[in-house]
Length: 287
Image: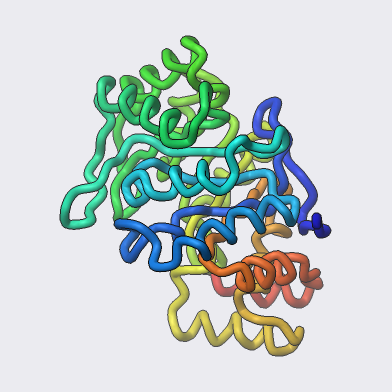
């Protein structure tokens, strides 16, 4: 049963997706390693997301590793024609749960082939090149790695390309090599380093996907967010999601959860309308 998802839809190249998507990262076990504690619950969340009308699922074969992609395949394959799965390559996992980079050409090809196999696909809708490290974007050229993905795109294994955890300079460098349809970076009310980049991408028709959209709040900032939420009779999470949708028309949400109830709460909360006074008060959090 489809519901009215907040935010309408966006274009990832020639793909139409709902602005309210679903991030599958939390479906894996603790620290995004191993299988979920509740397999049936994980499968139910994926099926519910599609049943509610979500047409954009964000994943990576590094989650688990391999866990979330295999769950997506088990829950949803054969995929509805309207559903588009977006994945990431450029990092792998080690035994300590770290995210070491894996951006050599051979490793990138292997990662693309692994995503195809575990998702049960012949072509990936969108592949993001993950850059930087756990501390955030890091300067440096992406030419070799992104050029490798562009080559795999020409081979027909990838429809569209994007970048993740990237600096503005790396976004521009990627665009000089091949068109991109999205940028996925950390961004939220309290962490607004990409404000200028978001506005430039909006002018270009490129989608911006914030990850960890609800994280990064200090106690003081949480107090400010909670005050607005209390005045509106809403949860802080609802206000934070609604703020992101109202921040710019090119923002696409991928909040994750392993709970069907929480998924429904996120959808309802993101549909909250924030007034001018609310937005002015929330904007102070990021200053």
